[in-house]
Length: 308
Image 1 (cartoon, one colour):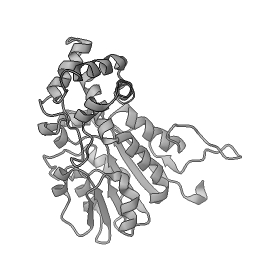
Image 2: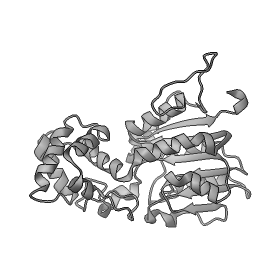
Image 3: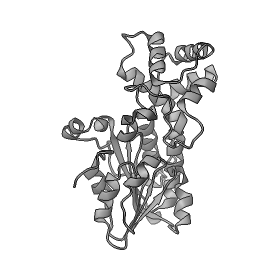
């Protein structure tokens, strides 16, 4: 199967294997992107199967397979439950969430997701949203900026970065990726400002702009309701903040990782993880697709009521 240039699907064959697709099942791809995973799922579905695909980015909509079995929802997947209900779907047999930013979004300089290009600081996955990275830097308080860089970027000296942003914006707004890179270099020094640090700064802003962790939390908590018994959830994450939430929820049934047990000491959880460790791409895939380098895939299955 030829993969689209728009976005090379990560862990393509592993995803299809672990979804355990039934020919007449109902499946959801929460992040259409280039449509690679969606096309693979469709090939395993029979004529009575259905695939619902979500994407809030207009650039991705043309990548939806032209097939009567496909329903395209042009929205953020935080609206998953609402649209399943709208289309008369009570429960689904499997769901794929390939989180983060698509290759296209990173490579399209004008979107402002990457520090590799000079562009306006945008970072909106949905271009219709009001809040952009530029707005965050212009309007957020020093305390809020410090919290964002610490929580979402795991930057140790986030207070220094927040202080510099607030001081600089009084004289000149920070509107472009190049201006932000220069500011980070002025705080930490050019020698210490490597690609890893810049990635952390840009990640923190992107997560805030798109509410990525809040959306993920809402999705995880909806899984017990939307999955049919033995239905599967396959989630690919690209940084520790996402992976920790997924791991906690799959393992314990709570986002925090706190475990609840019944009278007999048995763990109460709606899903059971099917992998003890995350599935990662092969060295060959990482060499072929640099975006796959940090990918971690976790799989869980809904426990039937009688087996809990």
